[in-house]
Amino acid sequence: MSDDAPRVLGPLDIGRVMAALPHRYPMLLVDRVEELILDRSIAAIKAVTINEGFFQGHFPGRPIMPGVLIVEALAQAAGILAVESLGLAGSGKLVYFMAIDGAKFRKPVEPGVLLRLEATFVQKRSSVCKFAGIAKIDGQVVAEANFTAMIADPPKG
Image (tube, rainbow, N blue to C red; front, side, top):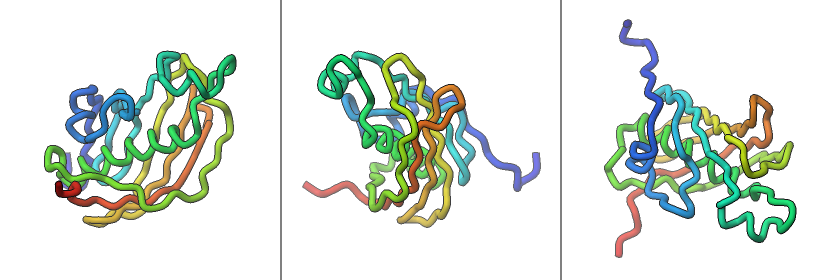
């Protein structure tokens, strides 16, 4: 393998996901990482189940995953990509949303699906990263967004 060959990780189980992200139930929205190409991209999975608390009110009789949570799931996948690529896993650093652009929702996301979360670096710096994200079900795009995140120390207190 040459030195410039991409380094690929995966699959990564929930333990590795939780080591990279501070999120916990009910806000942890990544269940597994299928493939992570350091400094490039990530493909992760969110198993969408009827047990999600938000389905009780969004909407009774017609459960649909809120679009903001789909974008949050994409951002969490991108956070894993950033943390792993920058060698920050276990450092306590947090990845904060700074901007969301061009969010589009193409199809409702209902219980019983595997939501594939794909995020790619658009720009990578030590403290600010930009990403392009796409959410898919069975290969079909259901949502997309571009977003910017800041990597910082957790609040003191």
